[in-house]
Image 1 (cartoon, rainbow, N blue to C red):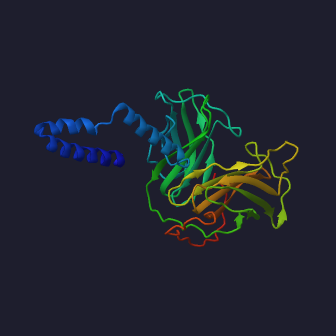
Image 2 (tube, one colour):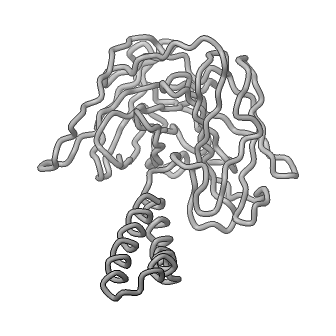
Image 3 (cartoon, rainbow, N blue to C red):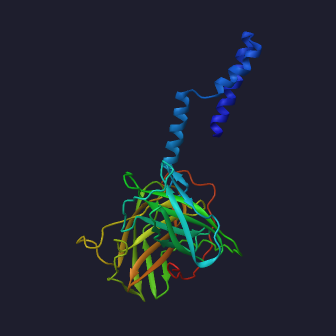
Length: 320
């Protein structure tokens, strides 16, 4: 939008000079107004550029993408341990979408995390006949939350992730982002180690290995058609990364632990929070990490390196 304004202003200036030179005086104003309005070809070009720019953005930064919109019933919810979140996915025609393609056993995955990247939740809403999704969230801690709807509409050629904010009024003390570490401790005596890192603009292999009381776990249970699910969120703007697991339970190759392998591409250098869901002994737990994505060799370094603060507090899983 700013570029279009600047180009229009520049065109007006040129036309004014031209008009003065030709002695057409009063005709300058209408001519300039007409010239400042793009022709159909110019408009199509600007619209195409906007679409291309939007497509290049990481997932989760937009409430509308590819004609689909995440519309929350309420943008403010009270603090509570089971507060109902209701929303709809509106299609290009403006009507709620009611048909989806299942991914990892669910039509839609909802991620909720407070904007300081604490209080992570991965839940699965229920869809009614009118196209309204609903799910209870643990909003015991006040603050601003980001919710990500991860889904694939029926007939759409790729998955979408749309994001929106939910405010929970009350006293709020942000939690500092922990320093990067290769080991996460989860209640129940579990430890998860991380092997591998992120590289900006390049796919990276990440292997997370699960232990309990120092003993490797070799009987992980399938959860949503995988032995683990990994969500990555960029610190700062909360861009959401698709992270894909390697293999699947029952494929004759993938073992039920202790290692779970994923592949991810970070869109930029900087810090990211990783959340690994895994199921063992009938309970789904979450291990959390901070990972610093590096620039490729020879790239210009960032001018600001976001500060992080260490925090050794154990995580207690989903909080569900």
